[in-house]
Length: 264
Image (cartoon, rainbow, N blue to C red; front, side):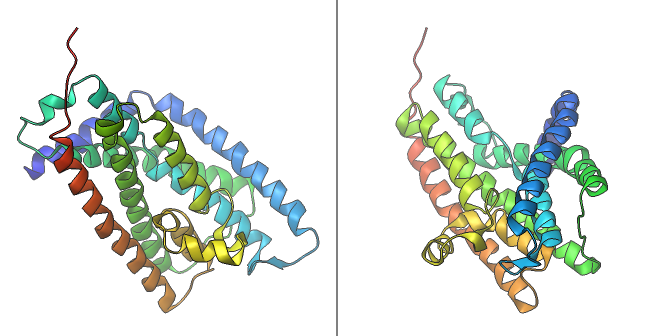
């Protein structure tokens, strides 16, 4: 069975490879986006050496690593699942000898591996040549970051699966998918670092899974989180991964009683 899931990863990787030109152009788009953020923050800093505990160089690194990390963990599994539910093709998945939800996660991983190799890595090198990025010199910090980035993928994918499965109950969950995407980008610290939020809102965000997607790994990478706090925040990611398995399992069990297919 493991070999079957590995084949799912390989097939999704090859499928993404067929459209690799789109991702090459995406590197340029992300670079322009990161460059715009850099000049905005440069204006905000003005003559100040540090804001929110970060120098301009650290903030530039935070923005770059956050957006390039997004290139790895981003996927459209919520839309794929919703479309398969609406057109009825998900019914076939009920009789196949594998777990539909796990297959979707493996498809997302295949896409993530493609994005990491052909989008995130070359994109980060390209940005490094243009902007003052400060990479950590400690190899162990790179290892911890990649572990945390993997959990970012898992948690984001879980949220996508949960959103997609709601199509069983809402039939059209387009609005929910858009709301989820905005919430992830905003509350994860991608658009605005969480330490720039007001005190009361930071306390609220600490009880939500979004910070585990972007803020925590990026804050570790830039040195905002150091020492034993690194492993505490890695534990937060692991905890959210485990907790999100519960609504996925409940939704999938309940979904089996909600399926109906309209003939044509």
